[in-house]
Length: 365
Image (tube, rainbow, N blue to C red):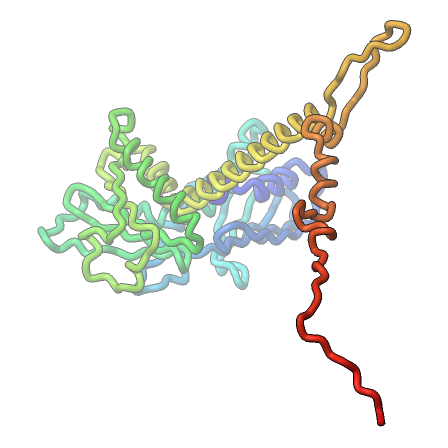
């Protein structure tokens, strides 16, 4: 889901290696992917052209109930990948929810091998999509009385629930948005506003209508404050019958399930783009400052020599300032002692005068 591809690239690579091997291989792989998803691939030398694939994936559940196994609809969907090649083993391997036995000998044409293995590698997306598909296929299958629209809380990741509200002619899917950093909130809000503007334009007239609001929409009245306390607002999509007809159903389901991942991907790419632009701008400013500094430090003067040869003399910045402003004399004046013109030594002499009263020294008798 992180790369928005239904097929797992690592799982597809391992299965193709097992299919194209010249001799049976004893292989055991453990794969961990985005969304607490785990794969276990195992093959034995004694069983040629066979491989066992075990899957453990978080189940899309409602807020009130948690399911520990796949529904009958999901199991039948997995069987429909390629019934000749894929077989469900009961009971599954310990610690996993489903185990598949793959028979590569039933793939008669090598041209179809890549296509079939790609479908097997997308089993996780098929399992997850089938759970939401059950809800979307009931848009016009049920008659709901006015005022009885109770939202269904769906949890795929613990901190990323979303709501599906069934209505007579449409489904409303609401995504509460939460972020930890303030910069992510600013980027996400700008993205949502642009998404609403583009989604409601004539170019995207066939797309599901989109709406963003900083407060909970009316459809979520009565929900707990813990679920409605967000810092990024609420994004709503209105799904009509035309959006789930034929092949559009799988595309609509996959886009809804990857909406949280899409928002995070956009925020991360935007932050990286801004940082790259800031670094490039900083480099250009530093380069401009260095260029102006070199121009000032390398002034070239033409001087005629004795034999009429022009010499190039480089003056430093300090030399230019000294010659232009004569800073040396000014600095000497500042450092020299201050002299007061009228207070010289001859003016400070006291005049001699004779006293009127005289004193006579007495002899000792």
